[in-house]
Length: 284
Image (cartoon, rainbow, N blue to C red; front, side):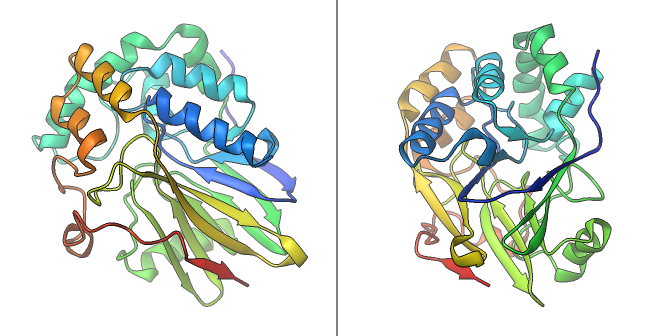
């Protein structure tokens, strides 16, 4: 079996970049995002996934094959890493005995059973981190953090914690995943950007899911968060049809998470409040 390198350097990237996280086995969301990228003329070489291709939803094998066939860049998430390693849990860093932990005992074994050996071997070739240069800035793509693939980092996470990843990577921009919520944190001309995920809504009471666009027009570094909807009814029904957690399936419709166990207090208080990031454009 081929194995990944820890870090893959993509060199210099130019033009608009599309960054997204956590497809979570949600084939319908992936298909819609692929359509959006094609409509906007963004080529696969300029598209990056921050990991967790596989997750809570019903079509893990199909999701992996779509990402593979699309030819985009992706890193391993903790779910891929644990499937490759033959572990018996998702490695999401959930508290033992929590609702997230208990539900993972349903969806993770389902994912393991559903992913072919060929797909698992391909996942093992994905790097843990990506690096590249863009619009005069050095960029690293990580799943949780540079220190730990399943570390939860949120908007409210202290900057001192984020600084550890900036120091470890020596970069100006971090593109991260894992947290499930889109956000930006900028200090001292350093950018921590999380595109959010497309496999589940962002706990804001809407079924929308999120991605990130980067632009280098006039050699300026700019970013914008974008949301879209997709055929969530089909994704919902497929989850129910495969006896996956019904409350997770319901989240695809309601936009409300089953629980907020992983969230800091600041983010917990935002549950059910529609995120307003569409108009947020950063420039440097």
